[in-house]
Length: 358
Image 1 (tube, rainbow, N blue to C red):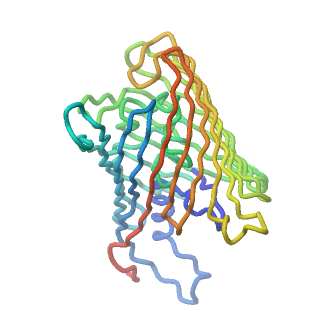
Image 2: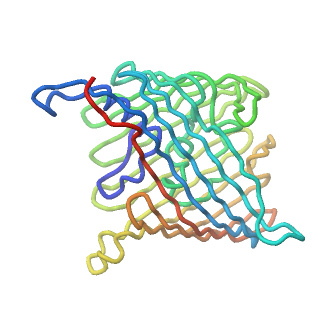
Image 3: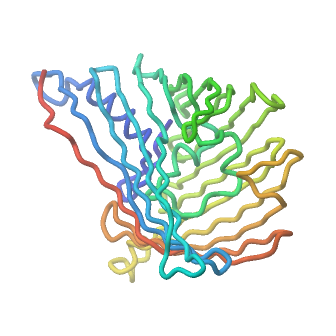
């Protein structure tokens, strides 16, 4: 998986990329870095994100504190253990009680062992984020996403708990001087142990990245090996024009439980010369999406056809600390409603030791 970022937008790195980058960097040290090259002793890394997001969904207030710590433990030059947990709550006002109340939900998002076989292949076993589309793996954490609401089609292809239990092969290589190819293939076994449940399925994702225009396009395919044994497929695109601080992201997904798309753009106001000092930390975001209900029912997808438009503003106080706000309008046969969000998100990185030579 390739990271799309530049010097002014380092916050778009996802935890999976950080893990693979860490393991590769600590495993190999270039001779050009020092006259006498030495092996570097890897150290564990504690990272993750936290946030507090207030939303008003159809007029009902929700308070949403969330923390998602990530632990990366290099076992040696080629092995890496990584895991992420999530602690969150949806606090609402209950009749007859004062204030907001809610329970803390706890989940292990992934717990996997990675083996870096070579520069083109990493083998993963355990519980891993299902690589269907791009949002679940790359954009899900609160400090990465531009808008705090989930896309309507997000549950398609990622299983009951957003993760798979099994094995995965992934990597990338330069197929041509003008473009690279990244890929992921995986198999998941059936698990009914909630909240670490998963479906029995197999699938893959592949993408083509063109560096000089900073464009990736790709597709996903998945076959469910249980129940109705149906197929799901999707397409994704990411474009960051080199000349502008602009992100354009889009996904389409189709399954028997529903289909739809989302298109999102985010523009950083760093090129406005007159307001450069005041506005360079501001990012404007817009998203349009549509969902079409399928022939099979799903508890995690809308029951009827739905459209949604959202507009947001993000302010980056420092690298890792972001203020967020957005407004959305949802249209469906179940009724139209407004959705407001307001909050703060924070990313942290803490090495658990000092790197040294072995």
